[in-house]
Image 1 (spheres, rainbow, N blue to C red):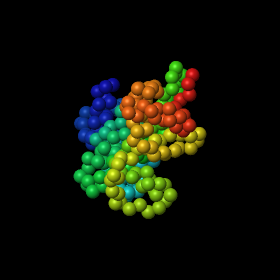
Image 2: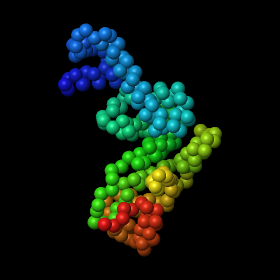
Image 3: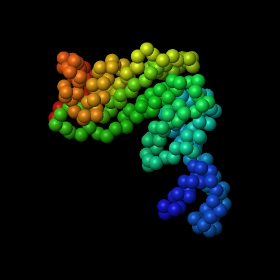
Length: 236
């Protein structure tokens, strides 16, 4: 079975033919093995293309649909799906775009695609488990970028024309993506709160020791804000 899957994957993704492929299938098929696998390959590409179109709609618009399809095909052949959950596919697409020489004139594209990837992950989290202390809610996603991606995204979300020219911001932009009821939200925060939330996320708990000593006086105010925004799980 492993040998079969390896050969099938090599053919589907890398376009490599194998004279012995026909030996892996039963005789008497209504179509040739190469024709059948060709159809399978087209369906695979079409399926992943549709997935990435839904995850990266702004990126597709900026690149132009034809160019987007080209880069998606290249990505599919270089990055094989390893998860049975199709929603997991595409996590390396932002860095893949950044590696392409053809897109070097769009240095902010990786930030934009990363933003879209994180935005697509909202709601894809395990149910909150009981705990003996507060911790960051699993629906909360932290995002940092070097460009004003939020303003860029808001223009696109409103259907306005977007200029390709996007300059780096003087300071990194810190965003919190979360869900409030049935609504998906994006909130900019300052670096201090972002760093604290990142520390809470890594530690799996809330504690004043997670703040630098010179910021410890802000602990109660930060905790209050996190609770008010629903970014912390409730105490048990």
